[in-house]
Length: 119
Length: 270
Image (cartoon, rainbow over all chains, first blue to last red):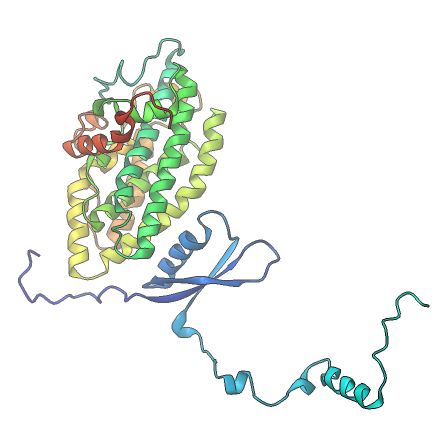
């Protein structure tokens, strides 16, 4: 550089690169799906890079970029995959298959055959 | 008027082509095609050495876009000239002096600030040129320009975002940007220098207005933008009569590079 050594930049230094998550819609009516990520210093360039990485061959109709730092995550398996049976919370209720099989075994009854088209 | 000495008969043989309109149209198409081809090839040198991976992909993709635009324009050109050559022959089989790209593109890609400055000057001028062709009476060109403008809009956004970041990105980026604009500013207007026969183009509704008017509008818009970023407005164009001739050594090196494979096996089918 031609300037005197130790010259202080008067202007804020350039943006620092950080990861941005890219979401894309492949065609009208589809949901936004996570596509991947790009490194960029700001939203404008993140969109430019997302466009190059995820739509330069016309594979998207809509893109979102979200600063990864703005995403709040939860990946605690104790919270997401609790160890006790939670099947009563599912719309189908308890899983009956195993209980029915045990009851049949006790009573000696066979599993009823599927009754196709009998009505 | 631009001096096209050395262009004929190497670049164009107009036997068979019609009068003033065809000749002027062919020159317009070839000048645009050569501009896109040279900047596209030159910018493609960033592939693998871009400042970051994402920008490497972006600039490579932009460069490919320009080469695609060049190919489409060369095809229109060979349709007008109809001398039996195909687009590849026009693109690769001319000596350096047969190319009529603007002198702005005789500058090498330089460092990143230089590339951005060159792209910004070129893209803004190209956009002004395409705007003057949006309603062209030559239907094949009108259809192509419609597609080109949709892609070039993104090119302009990309390069303007970079211009802004280099201008405000600290002492060294700004110093490099200013050096590049200072060096290339006097050549920026060559993209919009008057073409021989352009009045015939205007008369036939191919071009909306003479290049001097297009250039004046471009100069006003770009100066506003540059001043807004605290940069100097562009100086007048140096030697506008030789806007597209007398190419630089940097271009000769580039030409040797981009014709290398084609020359390695003359007449081969690729």
